[in-house]
Image (cartoon, rainbow, N blue to C red; front, side, top):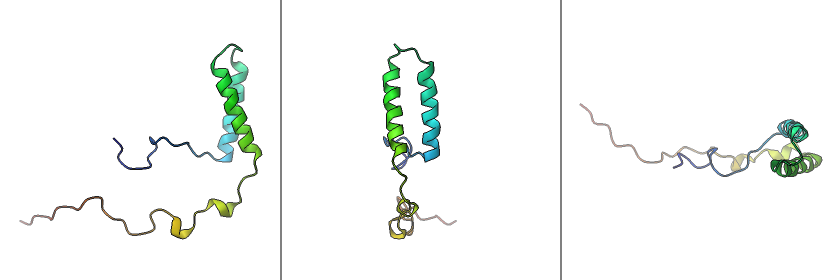
Length: 91
């Protein structure tokens, strides 16, 4: 059961920065070099390396496009409670 929508356990891809992708690419290339040619994971790692190389070859988006507009940003309005609290008992 999820505590809230959008938490890390949701089935969504992780967003990585360009530097993190470059680090991951180096690590995956090193992993492939140390693997035996008959290893079954080798093909999937090589596929992931190709995806990362294609992603890094594309020019990064301009900084203005990455920022959400003020009216589209999450959490700008007043926070509404999920369920009302019962009134306090005095005494």
